[in-house]
Figure: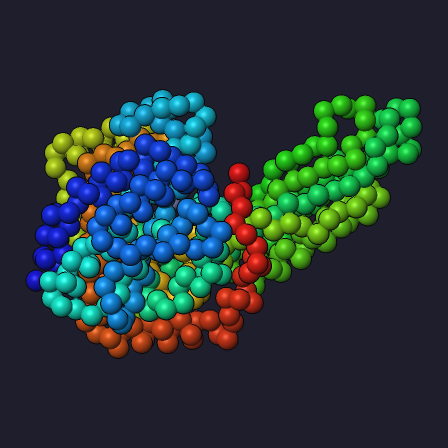
Length: 451
Ligand SMILES: [Zn+2]
């Protein structure tokens, strides 16, 4: 009965959120610059009657609140796009809408509006049944590397929340149990400039140091756990003239590890390599600047179990013939082109991701699900996703995600002991650690765009 009513509410109001998602799709903006998308989403929630609050130094984040009393249910949403993934809607080959412009290549236009829809239908359900409870929709900026949620945690946004639900668009159903810890940091080397032929003995090359640093990193790869990755980009070579010894060089390094403990240990090793490279070249290296950092995910099986039951109710995904024809165009250009699979019939629970939702999982019991919105075999972060971002299957997935999240919340409220159990589980899984001591981003750091 409850699920049927939630489905009916979604049917009644879905046009509001589909329209909002399409509008956000058309104004793709990257980390911490989501001004138009933010204004669109905030106006939508305000017009629906939600109370809006803002956070210090975060002009593209907002919290929309409705209902009253306990429990407090958190719904997480994102709106940011990705650089360079502009693409014309519904076109099944690469054809940017605007060359070099950003695009919704991760489906966050759907992610955000699906969360908003969940918040609204849940509120309507509370009203219809006189249910006590507060709904908080968190519009979180800069998930793609900028870790907006970390700054929201530091500003106390989630302090009164009992549990959080979240989803991500995808090509199948899923529940996240893992996310890697990640740090993105800059290393800067300083040397001495000199004429490369006239007085080479006077020069100390920062670029040599950076190159040796990278060579050291290639050698350490053999001695890392299989869960650890290091990626790098040379962001400043120090100059374009080969006959000058480069006095400055800079690189950006991303380290991924299973959890925060392994990440911190790896960061120390990378640091030693940087210092070694500086010593070899008689240059100096600054302490690395941490630009952003994601925590690992604290799994909550209490919430995941409730999520699984609700996902099962909706499987397999039902498409009309027309929708299936649409999806087939994109299946043909994805990784499942030759398998003959048209829809994914499993709930995937073994796909680790990297997201700042994981940071929230340290402070509030949190569940993250996946719901299909695009063709099976569609690569992540791609023009293919941008192309499918305002299609009928995308809308269908978004509306379904809103319903599943609302049903998870209602199931948890129906048995308040589950909320307590989820909280206890979080406490147990933290093993005495706190977010404050584990988070690599200092509390007083202000949000900055990472690209
Ligand atoms: Zn994403």
